Image (cartoon, rainbow over all chains, first blue to last red; front, side):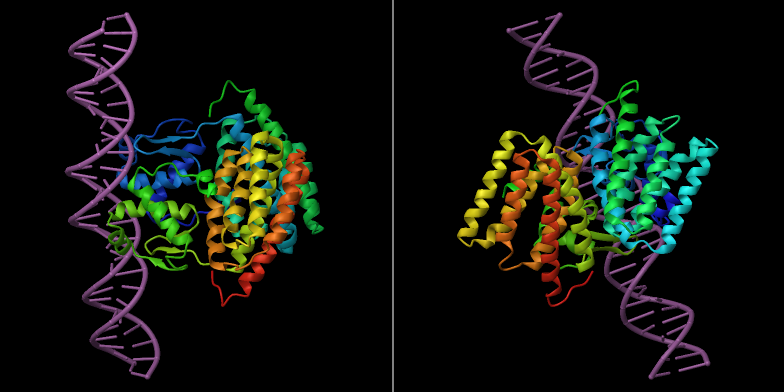
Length: 229
Length: 229
DNA sequence: TAAAGCTATAATGTCGACACTATAACCAAG
DNA sequence: CTTGGTTATAGTGTCGACATTATAGCTTTA
């Protein structure tokens, strides 16, 4: 689970931060259902904290785009829809494409080696059909490249905001057996480009990879019982 | 100033929202100097509001990346540095490139006509050497294309977060006479590509345009007295 | 019966006060 | 004089209470 440490968060020293982390996990993992309205008194009582701290935590969740808020009405967990999923993938295509380009230029040799190792781990897990942990490996792969871009703002934007949404959708789509073999091949090409320090190619391949992932995810989502945004 | 209405904000009904807008403007226009530490009691007294409301507004500013916060220490206005400026431009290159591609695909004919009109306005102001308002025209141009992408999340990310930083830097760099003739030519090519519905070309041209703008801005920033992040 | 207005209730927005933490000034010891 | 520890102070984090707004249910009237 390097993708958790790779991203954030420092030890949450304040109550609001702990609450934020707890609620964030609860939302991402579906404990709190999508689209549900948040009752401040109720949640505050459930977690044994003051409404003030809770409101601060909700504010942070709003910035992560995990809840939406309307004045004098309240906050509710985001829903999910194919349109939103496409929007997220369009942003990922652009931003992670750039990240791959920058990673090819800025990654240290050591980081490239580590990236190759993640790929080998991915390969091993495919051989053993451990599809349950492949999601984590996939996140590790993408986070490593994003980190390698060395663009702090890009890193925060992707790891800290956008990937929350990715995990939000991924948990709800839950493809039993995913396209991991295909994804592995694409990952392999990307790493090769980075090893050659070919930023242009790395960007092109990453964009292709994310488009393919998008098509697959959208198909799965539309095959689900139903969805709503 | 269509760029203001084009972006947000609904009538700020709550105190915290009004405060947020006021503080945001004050920061962007340099009323509150970059890098300054925020004293909650002081600011709350200055604006005649409670610390609670102020803290909520500061939270929103933190999400816009206009202030940074550390637990038990406090918040301070962001500084500026060449590195950060480069980071912002790298994100803009990727995100606005994608926006231009999507705009070429999704803009209505009406919107394309409006975009062309903005360009003519730009041309007219160049002829009259009204460089003081060219910044607004430039923002109008970019915001129109971003809106044309029809990707709500991308729109929010760019118009609502990243462009605050653009304005933050732009106000402090304050190029007396900018590269408006060159920029106009580049804008012209982009609009032509969008009119032809050539998304691929629109993206390429937009990325080129933003790279050129980056080189120019960085040169200006490094020629300034000094800078700090 | 349906629609409009009113009332009661619950939830959100706002505030002031208290608790805890970090910083700075001061003092003491080497 | 410098360094380490201690204390005082200012500032942030947290909380409970009040004010204001939205919502649901009831009443009234056409």
